[in-house]
Image 1 (tube, rainbow over the protein chains, first blue to last red):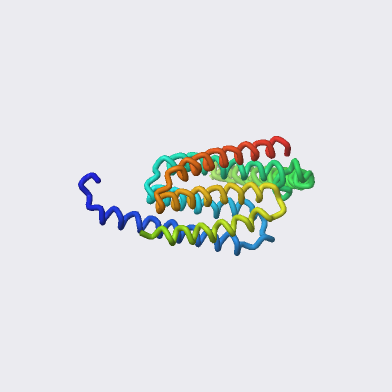
Image 2 (image 1 turned 60 degrees about the vertical axis):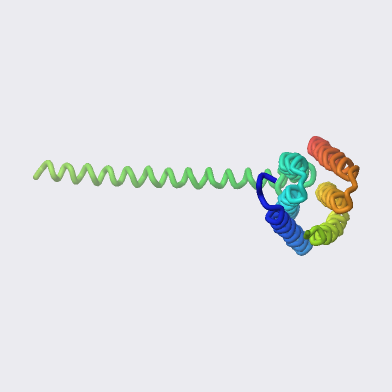
Length: 146
Length: 82
């Protein structure tokens, strides 16, 4: 094909197949070994399975099915995003304030606290700037006298 | 060639996806199902290529398209229901 020796093509195909098989095995071990008590573990699993998606695309190319590779190249990110979005809006109690209203309350409390802190800091700054301006005025008056 | 490595890896991966499907949440079931679809598609194409069985490719194409589009549609339904 294209003047390239068939042996080289077979070699490339074999290397791609081995790479994809290794990636699939590594992702399998990762998905099964990840701690299920971690926060946001579903997103981590979706992330790990993205490796399998890429391994599948490599395997499709190695087997000689570029149409499958192209289709899956477009569909895989859509799928991962749809699954993550569905989990967030449907089941994610940890991050979604709609499903867990206490999150919204804590965020409101934090906002109030930050507003208070900002007000206090502003007042302190104003006081300091008044003091410094008075000192400057005194210094300038002294300079004028000299 | 090294089709055997890929077949073994895919069989191991398909068992892992079956384990993922058994988790509690609906989203994990969807994730496992979509991954199992990919593994089955790859297995069908690999076996079809080894044994020169033509219609395996057609089955794999239908499985890939319908499986993934169905999963995306169901994910959209869950998202709206939530």
